[in-house]
Picture 1 (tube, rainbow over the protein chains, first blue to last red):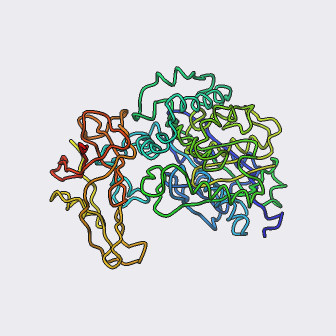
Picture 2 (cartoon, helix red, strand yellow; picture 1 turned 30 degrees about the vertical axis):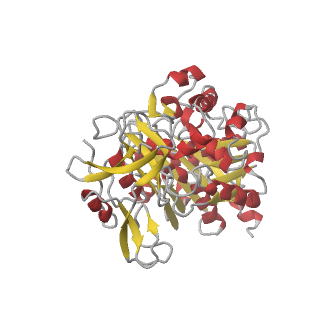
Picture 3 (cartoon, one colour; picture 1 turned 120 degrees about the vertical axis):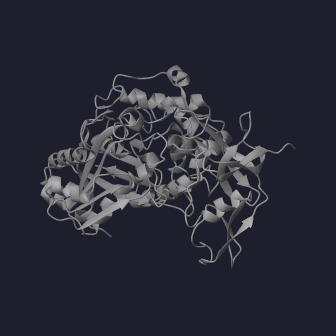
Length: 385
Length: 129
């Protein structure tokens, strides 16, 4: 049992602007976001003694330390699985801090995924030995070469079984863009869309994903600082507690190209995470005040709502139609506009929004929000004040 | 033209069989379990002794997509990508060669198609019932 003074708290968040052309290196974006997070927390970057990020990040720990002047790193991890790892970083941060290995733990993510390379274009420069990408071998020669194509293929059985239409998916996109339209930090600030806009947007992957079903390639950096409760009280901001953080990766399952195991209807790993979180955080995801659900593509929201047990299997479409995800609904969805509306910093900007909601400082602040669910498929965390 | 497959040490048997128009998957030598995608060790009995088994080549389409924007790299026009549940219970990503769009539940049978470098990949055609 971890004593109350040892409990992990998020004390700093930082980010750069989110754009389509940052005009500077990914390493500089990382450094700027990290400095901003340290300033927000009121800590000296030299004191950072642990860090993590996840696959496809090009900023090396050595370079981060060189720019920020970190004196010594005692523990570092680099997680697999791309954006699905965004909330996994919270699991690692919590463990690093609560075990006593680290006092001041950094999570960072910085990418020029629009201006320097195109995240949504065919990935044909893959090394056959690249980490966690052997799946490409079984997709590339068949013309399934983009994240959108893998996502649509793996969601197909679910969408077919429950008769989910393009209009149904469109309603999800409209919800995100509505929230983004009143968030000045969002790429799509003041640019809401209608269901008609969604329906007339071009196909990216038939028969599932239109342009407005997809998050947007973005440039930007995000950083988060975590420390123990006894140290957090000396920081500048109200500490946001990590009430629970859980992770589940199951046999023979891949992430976005999840084709080979299970019925492709249920997301069993999310269900396991939901149960463990309910036990460890003492509150179920569906009973939290804000739902920050990873939204690379619209079908992901349906599958995670069911996986994290906001509703029963096959019920997510009705859950959305009933207005539960609206900003004044039962479980407001990503009030920043999500990855679709605010920017796609590979999931990390949804975590910082969760923290702002707990602090009461968000652009679209949910009244009396005390707890938030952070979800990225294989991982979930509940934070609170 | 269709890009060549990426061949790795643990997967070369699959692509080399395709060059002989044979559709095979990995089979564990001691416990006879079939696996796809291939892997260096049998997760059931942990043997590294592997052979392969020829399949019926028949299956059912359980999902399909067509990559529209950007179009599939290397192809003259984006193919229908299908996820096939094979008779043997395994699943594989491939293509349906057809003028009409795939339908979930289509019964399909394997054939082979050449790649730009003269290699071969398994593709599927509808079985007329």
